[in-house]
Image (tube, rainbow, N blue to C red):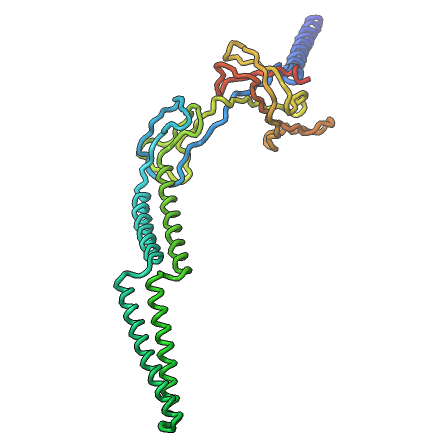
Length: 336
């Protein structure tokens, strides 16, 4: 009996010991999971403004004159595109411009000398016919007054005289047009055709200029997407250039930690890659990241959903050695 009691007591002690150890483990896990202090830093990343180089027209990469990581200056040639369609369109536009200019010149100058001579001869013929018709009418008018001819003969001579007057005016008008050139409306229309052809030519030349890739800023080539010989479409990215003079830092901050992070606020941060150098940043951008970056609450204890904001800040002075991608640390206690 005593041995059974001792065994029972031993089992109870072991069971109690196991329960105690289990309770300690559970408490420790709860402490680790729920009572662990927050990371003292909010980690951000340096970035820079960048310009994307692309083409207005589709073409083939003829040559690339820079490499990734290379420093370029504004106006440097980055590469060239081969655009065969543009050359054909340039020939067509040049021909259309020549034709429009010739037509305009003709409208402004007037007819050729041969045409002017012919028009003059027609007019003089009409003048001679008018003189004969006028004499015939005057004669018939006198004879009608003497009663020699009938009224019908007099009227026929008058009608012929008026017809010859109209013919002379028409011939004179044709001669004047040959001498003075086309009508004002025709000259304006011819000039408009020249302007339209010049506009088409200028458009083609602008496309040719676009076939040469020029750097719009001082910076560093960060990415080159196509290889030489590859085709690129209209607006397709060819390369990116980082503006190393416009660096900024981005942090993702919960809204309950925004604290002093207000527009224009100056904050201090550390850069591990630069021997923990402390830099001063000025907040220039605050915006929530949307529902995908929201901390969802169970709301069982009166909690609420917490949004995450992107905070951008720029150095107040140039930071030597700072490059896009470097880690930047912001102390949480500075946000209190």
